[in-house]
Length: 67
Image (tube, rainbow, N blue to C red; front, side, top):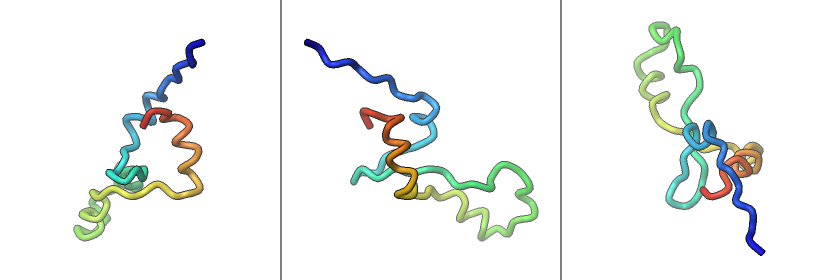
């Protein structure tokens, strides 16, 4: 009897990444608009990715079964 294949949530697949050690990454918040009011140092920091919090990780991994 074959096991059912799970579908990947496509929006989550595009939104989140995985590090080499299997941790989930995400982009930063507060980058959409009003960028001229932020300092250059703050904008440079917002370019970097962040790790997903442990509280959200289980929920997101359910959307990405094969990642």
